[in-house]
Image (cartoon, rainbow, N blue to C red; front, side, top):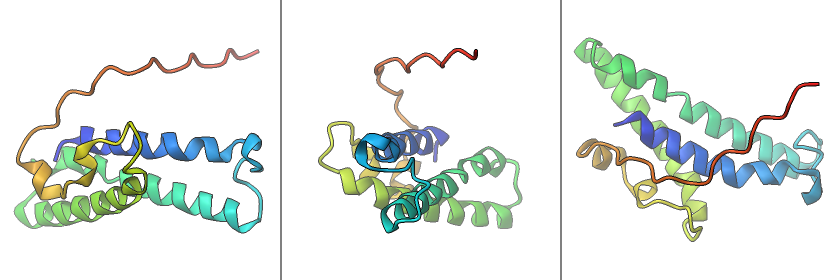
Length: 127
């Protein structure tokens, strides 16, 4: 599996979650002790933990066969976690077909190049 799959699905989910932490939605930036804030933090942590496995992909090629199997299992499991979360927004315009596929289906072909999207906002100036 290509690391770009993990990067795209993580970015998609983060784009859905980040606005939910804004004060405009009634959130205390996700740091409240209400159940909604706790659920948001838990969900964001699950996404970050599952996407961290992408770091193993670079080590897979040089790993011994037994370690390769462990890496493959970890990648498949964590892709399924991210896939399950992303599919909650299946009707969203930015949802990609690849987010529905199983890990072994993505192994068959390299990740397509990302379509150009809107530029990221500039970083705030430090003052």
